[in-house]
Image (cartoon, rainbow, N blue to C red; front, side):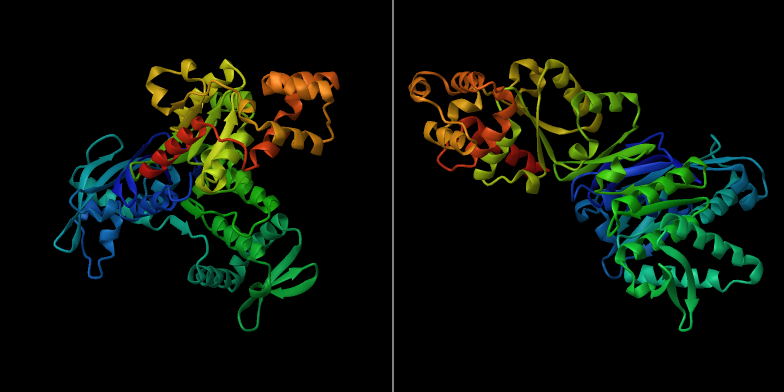
Length: 495
């Protein structure tokens, strides 16, 4: 079973999401609060309720819990959950006794009226045609199968952990002819975590791990081992399922993150399962995936774009020497031209009470028109919020509102005494003539000449010197940086 297309509208923080050609292994990324968990929840509810529109299901909302599913709790608009789900010939044979693949297209609409959530079907197509009367029973059977073949793995939930342990225990205590499944699972665990040589349930029905030939109860094991065991067991049981996983990296060493992701990718490649994984891990983002679902936010609403890691994206990132995780985990990307060093801009923003790493702001320097062109391509691919510091004449007129002109280099704002103190700290002491020249020349020209006489390329020290100088409170903050700070705040206000 596999989702290939998905449509979500008016669900929790999500205004509308339309995704097509969804892959097998999908990594869901975005800044905190951009709707990653809401996206997984929408997928889960879609699959659990494929036939609810046909059945015209009506659920009383006695505790006002269902209204929380509507975006902004505004139940005046309908919620829509729809998509295209493909079932293999083997699944169809198991469900219906017919050895032919099935493609089901469904869009359900949910209205909230008089304290009830009421389901109706907007669109229903099976294998390219509207269903006849007899086909509705087929749709019902397929929908029942789908609702039982989706697994949601939360970040950590004690009830879910206990239920998973019970499922492990049931497998362990299965009849002798089925015990091989348990031993196959134990072998998978040992292969993934070499420190674990074996596992067994002891008296008291508690799982005991053989770690370096020493027995350790699962409750006493490292939290990373617990998380990996849970993940491995869920993956092991997820044949023909759609797996929805929240941040599998929690409590997990990067090496184990890589192993878990490779295992999921290999199983999705072989058609065993489909996976949607939310993450904040650069190790998972940089792994081999089929699709990225990039959550964005605008005017308080979440949207998403589906991006395939094809040559176009890879080439752009290679030219920019940038990691995808540095981009998709942030809210705003700031591009500076050669007049400013990112670290200097960052320090000045801090003095204006904008902490880049706390605000989801990442700053990059653009060294050429080629790099600028590729940043603009990336902006379009990922629907990025981007501000340009300088370069206003080099970008399209439609982007000028997102640009802050900066005609002077940052060195022109450096206090000369602070500059001399910093140079002294790094072991450079200007002579009397050079000190006189400092009063006559622009700071940047003076620094280039000073370094050149000492056989040093100033460009190699520019970032370090700028970082030290811009940390000093007495150094002037350019008006352009104050304008930049206001633009950041205005984007944050609507996002």
